[in-house]
Image (cartoon, rainbow, N blue to C red; front, side, top):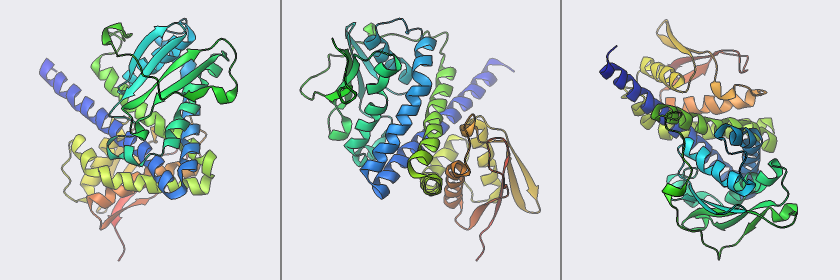
Length: 356
């Protein structure tokens, strides 16, 4: 294989990973919007809080060590973590050092997590819940009861971004003091030259693109378990499926194009689309023909890897594929042939014509 062939293969992989990242990012944002519009801001905030609590518990301390910043002063380490980890995930964040006890972060517009017009539909309570579940609890994770987070701006309130600073006070903070708001304060200007950098040899473009994909998928993974905890399995299954169906419909053509398809409405092409999508997100998938019907055998759904799986979780994936099928050709349907829905059993689907 010559250099040009390697380059083409690399470009295709980069595009497919970015396509998957966009799809899962959209699913997560869509889930919060669906819950907010159908169940109210309080439930959406509860779900967001659980998601970001889980993310912090699983990723913050190991991430500090992996990034080599666990020895820094706690306010600085927390701020640098959000700057570097979000950079790896493809999310724009700014970092401004003020002192060893005070360090700023800023998520400028456009916001990754509430992309596009979604920003207009996110209640302020949801943004606060994100901060309360993660940023305000970094001191708890570090066993430092003096470390809290001060929010100075929120994009969901029409301000120029989400902004604030980690601050280590002189005395221990009560739980309600770990997150406070100071809208009259303003962050210093961001200087990229003064910000920490990732070693480019360790994080080349391909690795960053794959990390961006994984970053978005991790949020959906966490949302699966958080939804069941907040709503219970039956209601969560319905919510996850309906969100998936809508996102699948809305993003099918964009996703198909990103994976190299130009939808023609045929069953076999849709089966190949699922296969390509699975492979782009790191799953093994085969397509066979039974009679005239394509059969898709998906070894597993990698999003569920490592989870204590409840059948309600697969509703998200089933909904996403069914919605995509509706956008591909509304006269066809995706029939599930599997019965045991776990993270280890294969998922088997058949594309067939809808019954009249």
